[in-house]
Image 1 (spheres, rainbow, N blue to C red):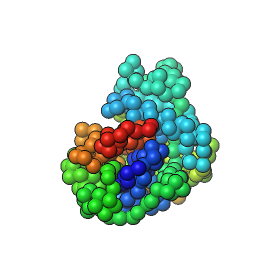
Image 2: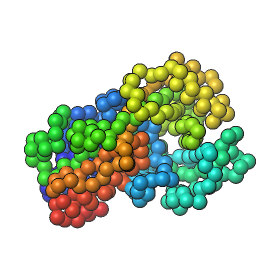
Image 3: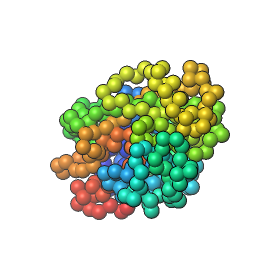
Image 4: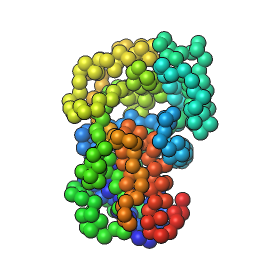
Amino acid sequence: MPLVCVLGSGIIGLASATLLADAGYEVVVVARDLPGDPGGLSWASPSAGAVILPSHNAQDPQIQTDSLRYYWALAHRDPASGVQVLKATEYYDPMTDDSDFWYKRAWPHYRRLPASELPEGVTLGFSLMTCAVNPTIILPYLQSQLEARGVRFVRFVAESLSQVLSVTGAKVLVNATGLGAKNLAVDNAVTAVRGQTMFVRERDDLNEIILRQGSEYTYVIPRLFSGGVIIGGSRQPGNFSTVPNKDLKRDILRRVNRLTKNAFKDVNPDTDVDDIVGFRPGREGGFRLETEGQNIVHAYGFDGMGYVHSFGAAKRVTDLVGQLLGGKSKL
């Protein structure tokens, strides 16, 4: 089978490499940052929450559904992947109507919450079953799985897409470079969105994802095999500081306590947490998942929903690679 190069080893790149290998292609992953490297301004995947929760205004609902199906199966097949199935409860304000929520049938056990179960200030709530992912486990896990199948990983700082095609000799290049696409794909729509969270140590007593959106963006995410939970969050376009903001830390803790009935009231944000600052690979107008010319497939711009889209996007990537090479995907 032809050689396909995946440029980028974040969750989009690793998912794409996995499904391309499943389809029988020879695959090489080329990246500046590799699993095990710290996150931050350079790449987003290690800093993610991460949960497989759908968005009611999804650009392509099927991609999110396909991704859930993959993670759901992986959680049951191999818990060592860092994926677990959990109940999730989401609250919204000022939204009151869920009639157009496409995922009511796509996600298991969707249940709208009666008003009596809603916290103060919340106008809509529901629960469902989904998956939580520990990025510190799944990224190295996917790399090891790929290497066991003969996929090569090469650390390389790319100057252009054409350079990578030339150096690797690949027939097709998958551009999964996240924020790097701003320069490599010459795409000025790519923009960084700062996020700041905290990992609360020694809190393995929580087994539910809780999220509030609307007037605020607050969440609690249990993290498998870590003994703790992730709490957040924030969205700060145009802020490129890698230093944790102390005022924001206290605001996050205040919001999380209000959301969880003071489940974290004894947490000291200066001594009981590990700070996480990451930069989501956003893109004005939504993600880019398409071919360019005869040998490039673009897959970037998923903002803070890379994990939600990852394996669904990888399925599309594999189909697009097959089209460029004149064949059909085996998936």
